[in-house]
Amino acid sequence: MTPHERTRRRRLRRIRITGWTALTSLLVTLVGFLTYFHIVFPAERSATLEVFRDDRVQVEASDARVIMSPTGDSLPRGMLYFPGARVDPYSYLYPLADIAAAGTTVVIVDPLFNMALVDTRGVSELTADFPDITSWVLAGHSLGGVKACMEASHPAVTHLVLFASYCANDISDLDIEVFQVIGDRDGLLDDSLRREAESLLPPGQHRTFTIRGANHADFGTYGPQPGDGDSAYSDRVMRTMITGALTTHVLQD
Image (cartoon, rainbow, N blue to C red; front, side):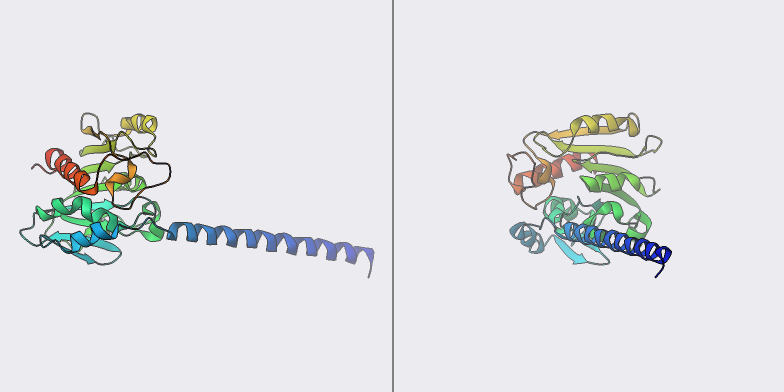
């Protein structure tokens, strides 16, 4: 074997080693990503069972969504809800059960990889099988609220509700009402960034409602979240306050 051939062989060996190392690193990263986002904060069993036993509403899963509709008269209005990252969508049934019981159909997205931001489905696709609903309240918790902001330009959307969240895209030119609900014990929401992001909202058409004593996880029933503050409330009290805030400021018409 000539010196040139030996040099060429060593170079090819180094290229193969580098390639296999890069591929292995990519696979490890991908597996880690998929594992991380498939470990969700599960819905509390007792709260979820209470909703399933509530004869005022009915719950069904359909096409990567959880649908909670009233058993009585339905209004021509729905709520499309994007969950927080890695939060079980069933966690939002209990806080919104009274809203559904009063006539508003609630559609909670079960997003790809438990992450609403990577789910490409928009309002049209997610609401296509509800022809009797002519207007939609778009809502989201935490990073789900960021996704809701991205879909807010749909013509059927009349209100945007952000639970412990804020917009990352500019929607200041939209003719919709924006209602932010936050807790003053939220250990995960950066309030300075939330305030800065208010410039992205429609001027004169957004309001903020603060629930004193509430934390980040209080807007679902999935238990404590690392880094969050301590809540002062039970799930039942939080449901009452969420229902009151939405009924007064968003669903009054």
